[in-house]
Image 1 (cartoon, rainbow, N blue to C red):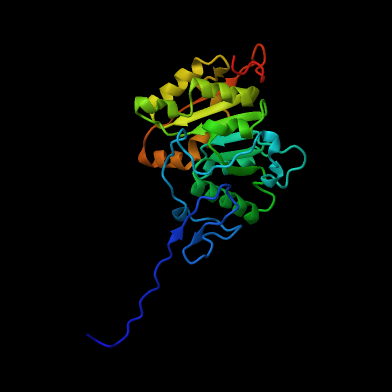
Image 2 (cartoon, rainbow, N blue to C red):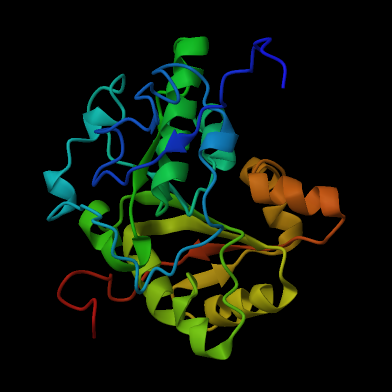
Length: 281
């Protein structure tokens, strides 16, 4: 064996992830302690990949949530917005934040909140938004992300009648019949969404699974608080174009040549109006 020394390349860095109770309180770091992404830098998605879905009914990952919406200091998320700054648009299961950041310039007077259950993915979106704010000052201050299990804790974050739009894009189809109760669109959850949406506001649904689309339509059509907007009318809404084209999952479906199925519903006026006294009646 030769005694000549050989210069070997340094070992590649490996990422170590923890699961902080609240996103933003603890940085994700490499094993040597260096932050994976510095604040205001654009994160690299390869360091933040996670399982495609999580079971929302059994998920118990030290998630923290407020007692009620009034307990939240929303200026932490929308620091440049004066006056009332609670969310008015929800992107439920926002994934890597494609739609969340795309809605920001389209809806400058709205406050967009992405909600994501997976810790690493949520942190990616937070860093992405901070990077966009830093890259182009004055933009994306109306977009934010928060880690939450919306199937369990939406009441802790959102006050009734305060939302203008809810987006549910490419949710987990939960194909097995025994897992249908995990689906993010059910009659009971639609009742919750109606509670948070103001009359005349909209619910946007999209999937690449035709069977799930039929489920969405069946459940939404049967709910007395929602009326479907005809597709030829709904397609004129610029939010529909963004919903179809800007999510990471939507782009993946586009590349594969598969179909996308969508529907938009309007929240109707309740008679009598839904309130805390009759919510469960």
